[in-house]
Image 1 (cartoon, rainbow, N blue to C red):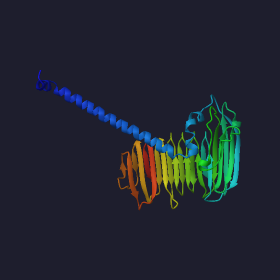
Image 2 (tube, rainbow, N blue to C red):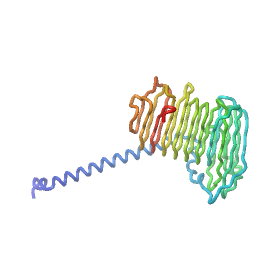
Image 3 (cartoon, one colour):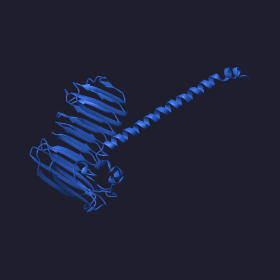
Image 4 (cartoon, one colour):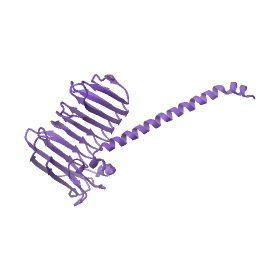
Length: 313
């Protein structure tokens, strides 16, 4: 059989084979690109976590170690002190929830309740560390561990702890005009009725951050994040991010901001008349609200992003 006869006899099969190989190659490249983007986005988001929190991710499974059977409840730890407007209150937890609500007085009120199964609740200390800029309150696991530090921002450090099921649930009543930073590793963080800057974050759990005056930095690794701002300071930027979960942000109807939103697997929707469209399905969206200015950064790897007007359903 000569070459011409071979081609005439097998050309349909050859063309079909080449088409299938080409499609498989393109699909492989697309999958590889998406996986690469997901890994890169996860690394970027993880790198944005505060050092004191991000360093605990290796101990996440141990932090979530649960007892068999019902949990016992320990004594309630309480703290009360006056805090001036524009000062910061930091709540640093490892395993347990943090709930922040407003108070009408000028004193900070904090209560912490230990829940535990087989572990000794005495292995967890609750420490208050006043400073010139405000106060930090920490739950520290481990008796007399000199490497554990209680402080604001990156000054907080908690060593890895294995097989300890003690959880500490914080409830905070925050005076008006006081900024709040609330972080945990395993548990939900909920900040409502704030009237100053907010930092709210967790590794495993949902986050809610609501304030009448930004900026806001809210983040999770495994959980959805919802942020609501009724007003902003002069530099009221917004950063909301998660790896696995949805991002929902509510903003005033009139706002000047530059918006940048990214998701690998999910939709992006906006109630605002962004220059790129008011509703769309994409992996990236950017636009200007009003005259621009402050930045609003919204990021998720596996989850949808929704930008809403306050009061819009």
